Image (cartoon, rainbow, N blue to C red):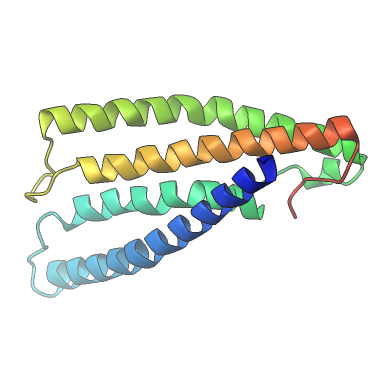
Length: 171
């Protein structure tokens, strides 16, 4: 049951990350390019593009956190871990996931509060007649997904540590 939940969450993280990155990064590149051309060639920057790019950055960051953890592209203390046994490696992975969860849980809670506040106040992006809540929703969903991934990773590493089974550290 745990393995099915874990693989489903990994699948959701992978496709959410890839789809949002495929949409957001090219859009950001095009917007920045058009804004630079408008600013330096025509001396007329496009209103609202800076704010929109900053909000699209939330799409890129929050959609990537969980998937980066899953594929193991996060930073970790390899120099020390290479000298550890399997149980100690699993312990460090458990502690890393716990510390990450302690860090991301308040971020998730605050993103939820910001989302509710944004919907209640009907906040709009400056210079654009566009609501802010979709960007806040992505930040909340991404942070929530990261918390879920960290929790599952912590459980997986802890179970491997207590059973003395395989190394769950990422490469």
